[in-house]
Length: 67
Image 1 (cartoon, rainbow, N blue to C red):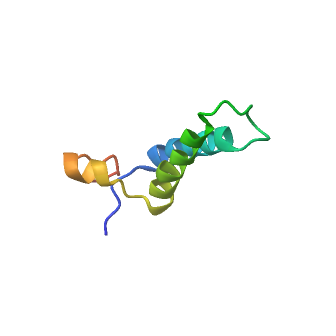
Image 2: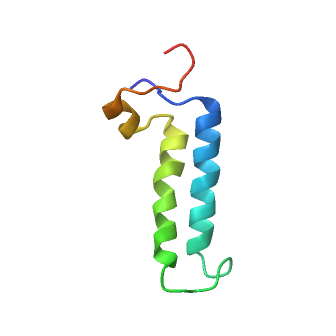
């Protein structure tokens, strides 16, 4: 399994996912009924940790250096 994400891409994804998850938590954001959407932030966080994006693979994109 080769990585297809650069370090900057991984960092941005991780923090964007973290912000979404923070939106889902009741002590960070007021409960609006839409806070469940914040749990989708786990997907970019997981792809950032692994360093591989499935959509990049399908599209043939790689932001990893040297690829």
